[in-house]
Image 1 (cartoon, helix red, strand yellow):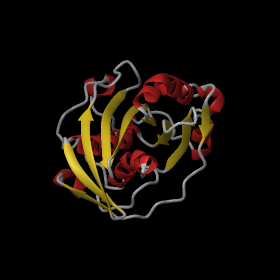
Image 2 (cartoon, helix red, strand yellow):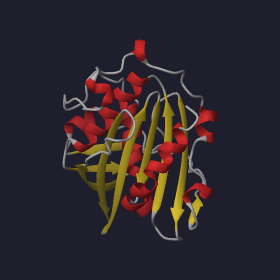
Image 3 (cartoon, helix red, strand yellow):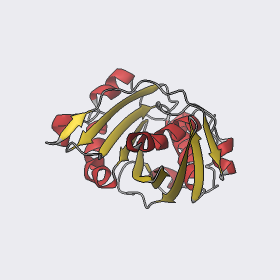
Length: 230
């Protein structure tokens, strides 16, 4: 159950990103970052060319980057469970009935998953590339919807999961735009806490998710490696 809960956050986000992006986020707020202070990113100022999935793959963290105690997890088979969101209409309207699991709906992507110390602690890194505007609109809309309701329930493949969400301060010294959230999943008497932080740097989106301590430990390293060759 712990692994199932830990991946639900990414599954819901993936469902939301399949919806066409809007020019403003779900709460109507502006992210006061280097890009928003000078205007939202536009297609005309999208910056360098999009990176291929193969290029993104080479920019992911690996076991040697993370240090001792980390083991790469094999890629999970695609999940096709129906997801229903209860108690959060905005989130439900944005795609709660889409498939659970998988990656976000950007054309160029790469992902790596790791366990730590032989325990239930996990960390996942995802890289995406698209125009700056599409990345900005898409991820903002998804994460704002997820944190718009402080508590709701997700039924995934017939299993009810209670979710508590909290928007966290994002590290504003990283990249062009930043988002962060804390999600607590509870089911069958077990709870799992997942931190998810997303950084957009130009045409590159870096998302690090998993045990809060591991996300905090490796976020800077993940962004540095992903953007080193940009």
